[in-house]
Amino acid sequence: MLPKNHPLSDIALKVEAGQRLSFEEGLRLAETPDLPALGVLANHARERLHGNDVFYNVNRHVNPTNVCYVGCELCAYGDDPNAPDAWSWSPEECVERARKNFTPDVSEFHIVGGLHPRWKFPVYVEILQALKEAFPTVHLKAFTMVEIDFLAKIGKLAVPETIAALREAGLDSCPGGGAEIFDPVIREQIASKKMSGDRWLEVAGLVHEAGLKSNCTMLFGHIEQPCHWVDHLVQLREQQDRTGGFQCFIPLAFHPANTKYEHLSGPDLTMKLRVVALSRLLLDNIPHVKAYWVMLGRETAQVALRFGANDLDGTVVDERVTFMAGGSAGKGMTVEEIRAFITGAGLRPVLRDTLYNSLEKVG
Ligand code: V47
Image (cartoon, rainbow, N blue to C red; front, side, top):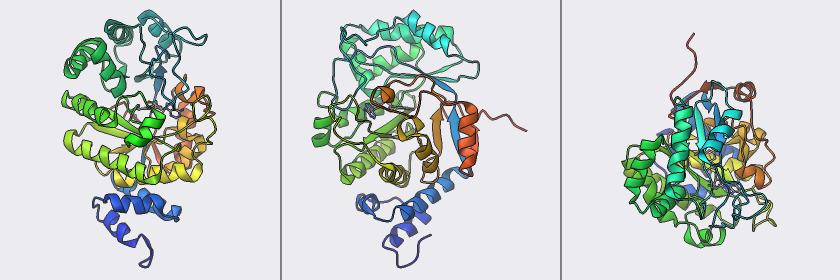
């Protein structure tokens, strides 16, 4: 793949042989000046796993509340209960909102929100129940590890009991948010009051042990260094070796507007492609890498399909987390746009459900 005298040629041989890369090799990749070479390696790894297939789904975001007592430095979404822009939807309002944007091809609701200081555990349960009752065929991918841990606390339950109660109410799998960066020194500066990285991983393990799939993420392009990416990815890989329930990794490009880090400019194109490629190469045990177009930007997401990513996420329609932090990729994409994006990159669009079963019509 690379010339014999290339500084990464030893790593290229390992990639070709499908061997696991070490922390040190990860760091060399993260810091290489030769971004195209990194792309070639990651594209090879993607192709071996997925051939020409690129997945997308038809989904909708439902954000029941932006009220959050945590106040993470990285976040523009959370608000306090009396803020003029705060919203807290009842279960019925969640259904009403979901109905507004609904079309029969929607297969997933992505449901995340703030840690509401006044909501009790049953509110979250009732939101799932109401959505499941109104949309019995739609997969509910709901609540990050941060929310699950919070729900256990306010419900005065152990995490496994919390997961069981949420499942009973309609939970089908969990999204990957809240992982941010595991390194404690960086985490303390971007999410000082959020659960630790170790706890995030522990709760993910409990979700997997309960038999549910989940996703995982990494927030990049703020104050971290390449060594923190490698550390984060290796920790995710180790967790996956232990409990095996991560379906997909999503690198999240930091959006600084309206956050405590407003003075930063966020990651540029080369950093986005670098992190996508690095994650494909290090996460040898996580099947999918998502180029989440909302966060990466549309065109960057398309190029990322040639830098290791094999999934674009979905149609989305009413995205709020990125939008409130200055995101400009738009709030939704049509199926036609997504399919044209994928074919434009020379790849084959595959409509999927949340668990990566193909929903393409045969013939
Ligand atoms: O948890 C918050 C991050 C996450 C900012 O699992 C920010 O399929 C950038 O996790 N700039 C929510 N990122 C998004 C998320 C997600 C999205 C799509 C699909 C899936 C999935 C997961 O966004 C948060 C946090 O980590 N975030 N603020 C910001 N200013």
